[in-house]
Image 1 (cartoon, rainbow, N blue to C red):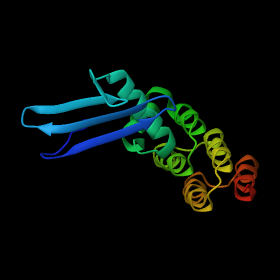
Image 2: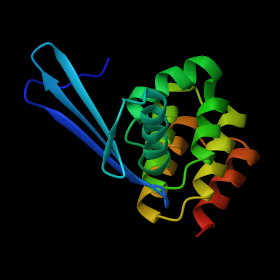
Image 3: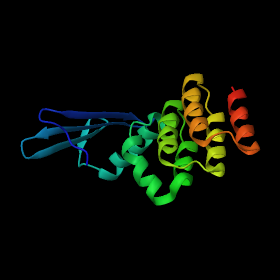
Length: 157
């Protein structure tokens, strides 16, 4: 469950090329007050747009990894998490999801090699190194497939 503390607020601004969207959520004594402005005009709250905007934000930043990971993993296992990671465009977000996967999954050979493959697509050395260290420690590099995928991820830049 997500909530705002007393006096708290949440603002989100999205420019999609054609329009400027601005969502505000404030804590009020009896609950939350939501406002949606599109190009400066107040519109009724659009929960579907807001959910899509948060999903897009997560795809770029991984800000919702801790909240989204459990559901992804319970519904589709490591494959669902890896599909999410492969659809992301930021190394930090990818790293957050992959590190949660490494902690949760037993990292049998197919999953370990898939994690190493996802890391190979990352460009940032720091984020790559964090996931590689955690995954190699947990999965071990005890098979040719794991070693090959690990070293390929290390050499990719």
